[in-house]
Amino acid sequence: MKYLTFLTIVIMALGWGQSAHAENLQTLENLERERAALVYAFAQPNLSADVRIAKIQQMYRRIADVERMVMRDERLTGNENAMVKRTFHQYDISFLVHASTEKNKPIVTHWLDQLNINTQAIKSSHAGDR
Image (cartoon, rainbow, N blue to C red; front, side, top):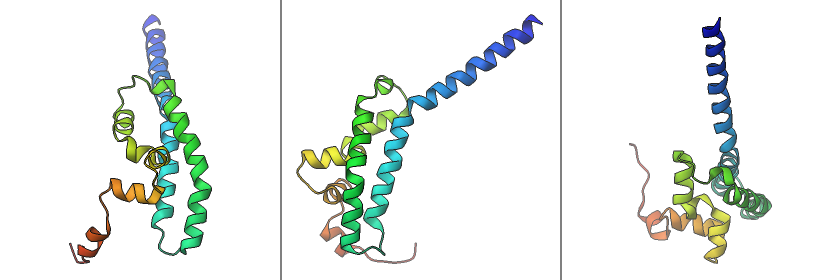
């Protein structure tokens, strides 16, 4: 009976630890979701330029808020998770709104610069089978 009680406590503790870990990364996952939606809006070929700009401007404030939440999230401080380390190591790509504002560039231009995509790279590329 004591063994069963001990085993139950261990299983509950392991489950609690996993749920606490998932909650620790919730703000970071929200940032990733919002950033992915923004990048998707950049790349949608069926949107006109005016609609694309309006959509990006609409998302801009929400992403800035989520970025601030991640930067101020004390649960991420000292977290050894690879996602957390990568996010803060790649600041210019992870925090697009803040980084583009700091560099006085439009967010799309900043994102393309970080990926080394420029006019020359686009002109020299070609379509083909892999």
